Every structure is written in structure tokens, then in C-alpha cells.
Image (cartoon, rainbow, N blue to C red; front, side, top):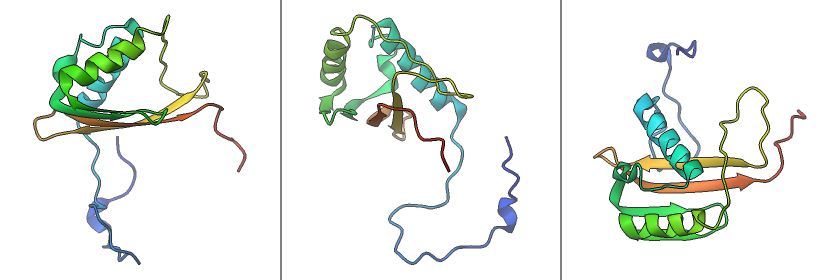
Length: 133
């Protein structure tokens, strides 16, 4: 999908503060999106072991309630599975074209050089975002 911006004609930008990361972003391989959505489906199905091979041996998860789970993959996934087991059910939907869910999640997933997930940051908003401009 093209954004309409010709990146070969973009000038370098000088920022007023030092950037501690690259400001030159690229769209990631769609396989990463599929991996994440497979994990969402595992959550909904109540079985986090189905795609556990997508995770790195060492894993850190920062959840929306402020909890941090960090350690070896099997231990972290066991903690997450323990929490999931307390829920009767879960239904995830990707927000698209005005569909509303009971709360909104924004997640940042990090993949290591071996294409394994090693970190997750999750943020939650309980009411719909304002549509006022």
C-alpha cells in the first residue's frame, strides 16, 4: 500500500532534540501481524500454548493493569495462562470502520533478530476515543 509520499524526494529533518532511536520507519513484514493475530486467537480460545514457539526464550510483558511478567518463556506464558483461566471467555475484535468493543487495547510487540517476540507493552482505554475535533 503506497502512502502517496515519494521517499526518494524527502529531505532530512533536523529535530530540536536528540533522537534516541531511528526516525526512519519502515512497514514491517505482514507475517508479524499474522503472528500477533494468531496469538490473539489463542487468547480468545483459552490456549496460549498453541503458538508458544513465536516467543523468545526470555520474555517480558507489561500489561495494561501495570503488571510486569518477566522471565523464561514457559514461566511467563504459565502466568499469562493462569490469568486467562480466570476468565469465562474472551472475544477480541480488531477495531475497524467504527466497530465498538467494550474497551480498547493498544499493544506494542517487539520481535528480536530471530523473529521471536521478546517484549509486549499493553495499554487500555475503557471508553471509546473522542471523535470531537
